[in-house]
Amino acid sequence: MAQYEYDLFVIGAGSAGVRAARLAAMSGAKVAVAEEHRVGGTCVIRGCVPKKFMVYAAEFAHHFKTAKDYGWTIEGASFDWPTFLAEKDKEIARLSGVYVRNLQNAGAELAHGKARIVDAHTVEVTGQGTHTADKILIATGGRPWMPADLPGIEHVISSNEAFHLPQLPKRIVIAGGGYIAVEFAGIFNGLGVETTLIHRGPNLLRGFDDDVRSHVAEELEKRGITVVLGAQHTAIEKTSGGLLNRFSDGHERESDVVMFAVGREPYVEGLGLENAGVKLTDKGAVAVDDYSRTNVENIWAVGDVTDRINLTPVAIREGQAFAQTVFYDKPTKFDHELVASAVFSQPPIGSVGLAEADARKQYGKVDIYLARLKPMKYAFGGDERSLLKLVVDCATERVLGCHVVGPDAPEMIQMAAIAIKMGVTKTQWDATCAVHPTLAEELVTMREKYVPMGLGQVA
Ligand code: FAD
Image (cartoon, rainbow, N blue to C red; front, side, top):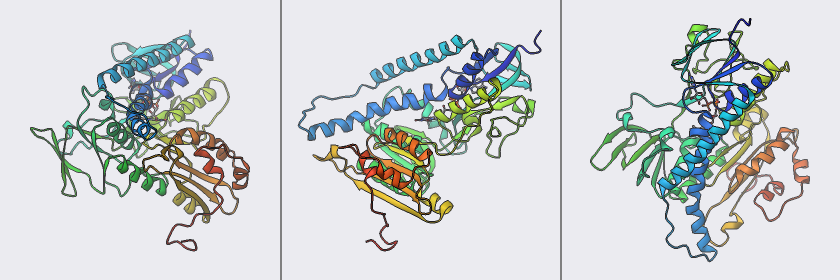
């Protein structure tokens, strides 16, 4: 008789846990997965997928404006939030069902409830008793972080609730400078909500290229979002008219909804990690090695709970690498270098590789190629500008980074990432013939090195 009930017990049925569980089960292993909320995790239930539907919904407002420039008459266009919510929830339920079926078809067993580690080989699931397993995989993801001591924080929603607001507010204040805050500012603004985005830092989207950051902040304002930088909330008070936001720069603003997207934290609360002696990093993430193994020999962790690169495709690949290593006898490390990412702001961003400032720190001399232009689509009206930027190592000519702000930038960057991951040089890049007429062709036709005003030779 086997020593344990299961070969693998996975905690969390999100992007990482589901991929790992499926692959492990398909190898013939006996696998259980515990999920306390809904199968699919953050990405499917309250992240990437519903967010992208909201972006699509919001973009129509801009398309309608552009359509008028092209001779269309748009009359009586209006948006119905409940209709949208119902359609979105239907699709999310369908996707969650697909995840459940995929797990079941692979032979994995699902346990609904919160899992808690009792010891290195035992997991307790609320309402379902305890189970033993040879190996445990922690894939519990992350959750929104909230400043608990801020006066009035009880009035604030996170992205979790933004997907289910009973009605669309007239006014919203969004705090945060990361991609979630920026994306939701675009969403609500597009849906006709008077939107203020407040961020305590000097610019939005820390970690992205500085030209991208300032370009996007300008474009958000052009679209009608009020962007407040260098200030933060000091209090939120309920008033007869809504919620009064008090800011550290002395300003006040009333809104109907206040949303905070000021950071996320690894979700380890109540997980019982201490019962097995699983160590955390100083940022509270589960500490793992390159193979996603914790300090406890039979316990691994993948996805956002390890706080490496918190994106769905990374979580999936980490889950896959774990399964290959442990159940297919094929030691695999996921390579976290040159992971492309997108921000579904309006206009959106696609980015891969190093920002200019980071490249200068790491490589010393770099060449910059940069174009700012009005996308062809807006030739008849509108003042939106796109930005395309390449960062190139002077010594080797290797393209170190590619950053695009403009229509379809997320689609573009996926392709650029392949070449950059393969170590493409600028000469090879330029040898690629353009596709015309596109915005992407600008990427392969930038020949002149860019010298920012004030930095030197070119004015
Ligand atoms: P999760 O998907 O969070 O899954 C963890 C699961 O574990 C959850 O279902 C949770 O309920 C469950 N769980 C936790 N603790 C327990 C427990 N003790 N017992 C049982 N179950 C438990 N990424 C992108 O790549 N592109 C995007 O456009 C994008 N947009 C995003 C937008 C938003 C608003 C948010 C919040 C995130 C977004 N992300 C995006 C990030 C992406 O969602 C995450 O990186 C991804 O979901 C991480 O997968 P995971 O499996 O590690 O964790």
